[in-house]
Length: 120
Figure 1: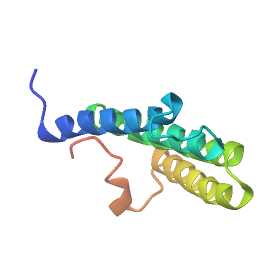
Figure 2: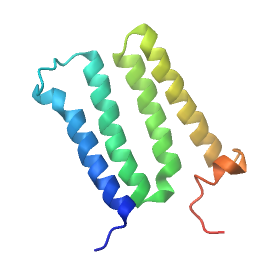
Figure 3: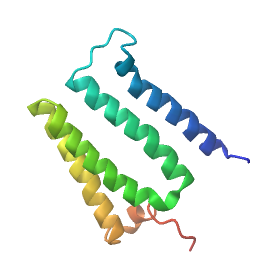
């Protein structure tokens, strides 16, 4: 099976992000497991899984963006302190809104072309 250069990069990127996200759980580097490291690990793990999925299955772009938005918002609210959780909540809500607008095809054409996988 032959993979393109971008697919190869996505596999390496996923390995790096997932490994980096799991490091605090094994106490490598002397990090302690607290709310900040748990939130960071969750986000890194999410990005490590989402990017290759988008590369290998482009039809899932909108769904992955929706799930990322939900997880960003919930991680921010659940694990981070009151000032920083607002950033994650805003980013999560932004991802959710963009995903819903992409599903409804209400985005401008310049943005909607990133979500369309059909050849025209």
